[in-house]
Image 1: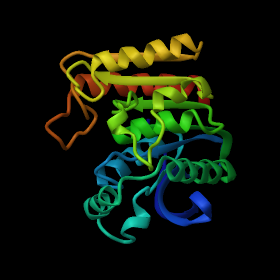
Image 2 (image 1 turned 30 degrees about the horizontal axis):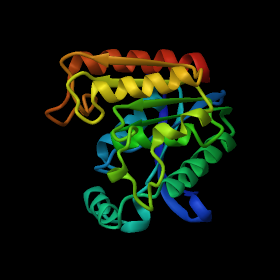
Image 3 (image 1 turned 90 degrees about the horizontal axis):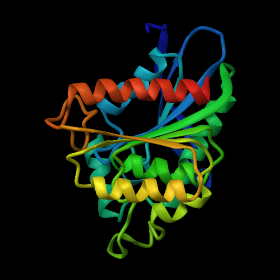
Image 4 (image 1 turned 90 degrees about the vertical axis):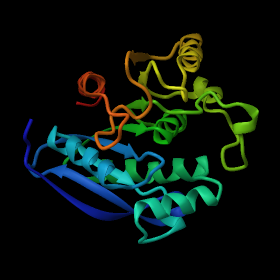
Length: 246
């Protein structure tokens, strides 16, 4: 698709009413579009994430990525802000939920919104997408190889006190999971545990694991990139969001 679009940095109200930076891309024509909140990976609010936001807009979505690391180093480059967030103990789950809630509210308030909003996250953002989907009223969620959804006691911290898999009974929307067979975090054994929890709680979901792919197989500028897995993954994303958001 090649829908005319625009992209810009905006300010949204996140957790506790904090003003944070976000990146918005949206089609320019005056018709109704669904929304997607893009949760960035651990390297942060970077160029490759913004390219994903623009890709959603080119396919007919209002897309918004909140900068979850903004508080830790306002105005800093993505790698420095990510390092500052890690040094502070990572983004607290409650803060992430609040920031994504602000992004969802922003998208639903756009004049061109059809009021349906999904969320997608990559790497640590995949874990956060799972947490958000169990916490907020959204319409669909995609977890792209989110690590530590199955958390050990050693993984739990004051910022992240609950293992995401334990939130599964509260999942509020259909979930798509995209994983690599060669990934260690999450491993195929862990994705099987997540799937079992979803099935036990009668949730609507679909999981796909790609052979010859590991972690971050969507990342075109990293050695982990796998062309076929990425192509098939994007096809599944368009089908899934098309079913639940359009």
